[in-house]
Image 1 (cartoon, rainbow, N blue to C red):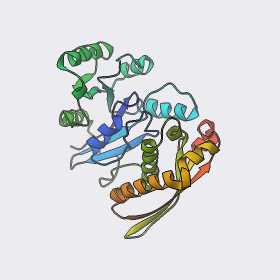
Image 2: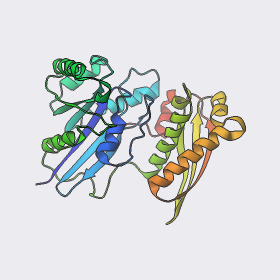
Image 3: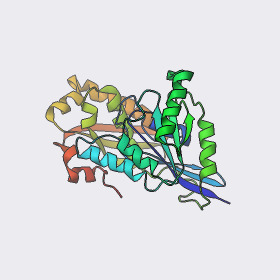
Image 4: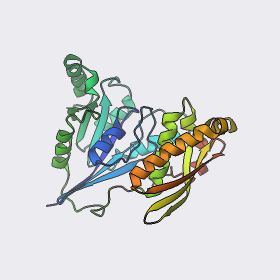
Amino acid sequence: MHKAGFVNIVGNPNVGKSTLMNLLVGERISIATFKAQTTRHRIMGIINTEDTQIVFSDTPGVLKPNYKLQETMLAFSESALKDADVLLYVTDVIEKPDKNNDFLQRVEKLKVPVLLLINKIDLSNQKDLEQLVDNWHLLLPQAEIFPISATAKFNIDNVLRRIKELLPDSPPYFDKDQWTDKPARFFVTEIIREKILLYYDKEIPYSTEVAVELFKESPKNIHIKAIIYVERDSQKGIIIGHQGVALKKISTEARKTLEKFFDKKIYLEVFVKVDKDWRNSNKRLEIYGYKQD
């Protein structure tokens, strides 16, 4: 009998959801940096075996929205509660268990299996971890708790084994050779955005969006033209940097990563444009792909 199902990953920002997703799927699907609010979309990664298909879904961190983009990000996270066959609620040893009670109460009411993953246990000790497990048992009594370390790959195999046991009997939802629901252009924008997150400080990364204007692929290479949009002229100057040095650096780093990702020679052109207050414009957010299905 074939098993298939949707395994949705939720939790607060910066607890390691994207690192976990990449580890489970074995592909570099979700950008994973040290900064919160890295993931903006709901991204699927698919594991296929002869008798199993697991459709993992990484979501933005749960937060109190301050602008329309964050409202959309929260909607992506909340949608993951509605269509999960198994829910992975990711926390870590640093955040307080009651950090986001509203969302937790919704998780508690779910009828599907919930696996609570306490990440970064290498930053804790046995006594504190046991207390944390007890606290989580009180908050989510129906959840199965797995202490893990995504970076050290600790206990991940046991989580994957339990997920497979919990999946319903079902034919596959996607073709067996498919590993994500996103097109190639999407990963170009994510990789460029990752470099922006790593290279710039403060508000700059959160005020930027990346769009691909050209993606022309041949057997040996890909020619890509991408636009980095910012909200203000001052931000444009910071992204470009003195004599274009900053923009050249992130373009070079993005090109190297893209060549590894696609396993082809990449010709990358990156430009910067101003799109005033795009984060608070429903029309602009829809154009940039933030509309819910």
